[in-house]
Length: 308
Image 1 (cartoon, rainbow, N blue to C red):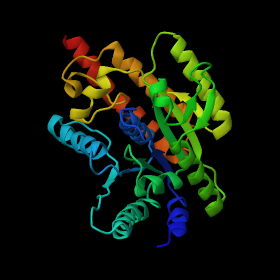
Image 2: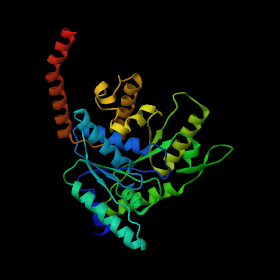
Image 3: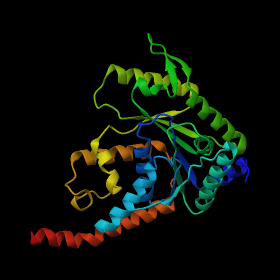
Image 4: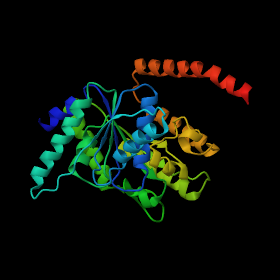
């Protein structure tokens, strides 16, 4: 299938969300898993694609989620998941052709039966990483709130901290968006996520914010707040949990804390900031299920209170 045909096909039905950043450690996977779970809890049909076949964090997370749901006898939403194998043959063109075939097959399998496709990309430049960026309806670039990571987007003057240029990754995204417009005249909504935010105001936080605002005017992205650096986000991984799950002693192995509540609020704020096109039929189904669940369990909860 030609490249342009694959793009048109991928975008025909499912809304494609891509998590991309050439730097590791930005919280890209944590955002990807929470976006996927949030969409499923909103009644959306979600497929996930892991392009980082070396680390496979997304794949391992979903495997952990499935295993923990079975072990604890709890209901945890699961997406339709695909992991695209990396090919390391002697010929680059053959490798890219094989990787493209696996990726195109996954997209084709999900495009008409799902509302969203969430794609996690590797933290390095690669053929599949560039291909995914060119197919994105929504591109999310998590960025640690520091000038150490700011240079994935642009460079700054060491005296004034004003922007002096754009980085290779930013140029790649701009080219991917240009190619997308040529193919189907659609626009990729690019959101740069200020991740691992400090809860305290600081000069660095202000300067990074000013730099991102200046760069956003030049590159055409939106800024949004991501997640505070919380230990609980890392603790979710072994059981495949998220901040939006029904967290109790059965799921967590401990009583939830205020940190869990605050983390859930951060995720909800992020989903709102993304402005995603929810299928309202799915939203209605999710609301009906939630109402039924609450009603069905109310007598049991009252009985427990009386018994205790």
